Figure 1 (cartoon, one colour):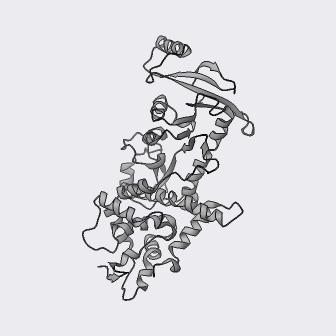
Figure 2 (cartoon, helix red, strand yellow):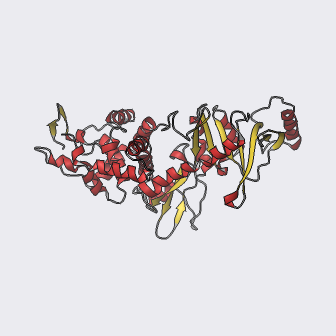
Figure 3 (cartoon, one colour):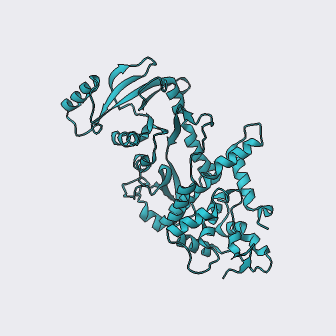
Length: 408
């Protein structure tokens, strides 16, 4: 049982638990709303109530090298210093049980409520004209090789992949897990295209979405563009758009027809209609603008982009090419999670599929909402260009264990 104490009024001892610099960015009110929505409010007083478990999950992400008990001590240890308190940090078993009670959906709900685009209209490099520059990419995470994880994420004996069915949107940011043991490493079967498809419905007309060549398919392009967002995607060499018109900036207009279920004469008719400026059935053909160029420092690597921005006066070919190459920052963002926050080659803690999902959402919650504000704070104190990720992590980790930050 947790002691009842006075903290400027009545409250539980665990109401004092926060997450240092991240507490204001993931506030208690948001946690309580998500907990109520998913019916996870505890019926009796527990050492680890639901809101503390969310903060603990984020702390487990911040201190990936420490075991559960050490992290729980970092987060709650100062409660023992309260007058009259008999607080003892929770054990590893208690942490696991609390995580199981909470589940994954509460953490996902909190992420949905606090995650937001970081760029303002004044942010350099974040906009192309009136469009907010967006990027999508995928990454993998390594899981413990438990029976439960292997059953949920199928693999073959050679460590390859085989098809499996997964609820759309069950993995955030087009990420997919893979299981690892000393004998084999195997990846859950879930293509980037499939995972990304569940995110396209979140696009808005103010956005310009960039994507690498692994994401293109006719149906994905059709769905993503139907949201009103603009698209700028690299395509594979095997895609051959049908030429319609050269444009003054070196780009050209083309028509792409649906690759299947159309006879050659039907495709010819669609191309002719496009050439004559007639309306096309968007389920069968789309007009795109093509930008071709090579990158000298990559041995003349040929790159072909297609975009929904058909008018060169809104974005020139040179601007589009430059914009596309800024998408590498998405890969850098995932590297922040896999290398700086989690640690290179590190396996997730979770030994069951639901806790795996919970842990992934916790990593995204820890990495996502706090960094923009903390980056701005750090840059305001330095005229040089520091490694913002490492500097931010130092600030956050120090604030979690800072006695001076504990509420008086």
